[in-house]
Length: 141
Image (cartoon, rainbow, N blue to C red; front, side):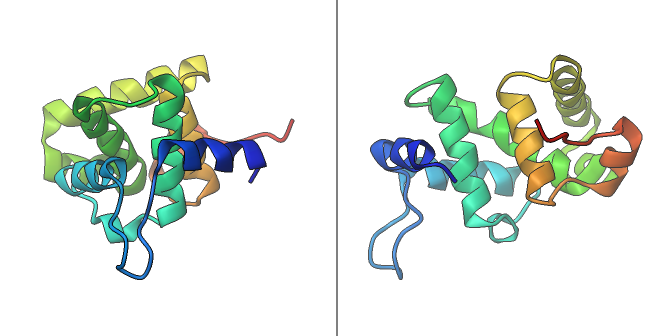
């Protein structure tokens, strides 16, 4: 982890809390809610992954609006659950939307969605079926 990344995270005020003394930051609460609504218990996503996700969001909009979190939660949920489990919780229309975003991100290889997919891959949270179906891999530069 680079110092610049940590400084960005700290400047934004992202916080996971500290032994229950200090509360979670608003962005972390919003992401937890988005994950829960998309069918993933927030506790199943490591705090470091969630911190990285909200930091990626901040790179594209310094203070993302509340409506920016549900699509991020859905993409993370698709990555973790795979197509069938995601569809079972979210329905076919939301699956189609999330898969379209996944495919567009894989095609372009750039942007927030691509960065989120790469984060999930490196965190070993990417569904094996998606990895195999799309041939997702990361190459060292």
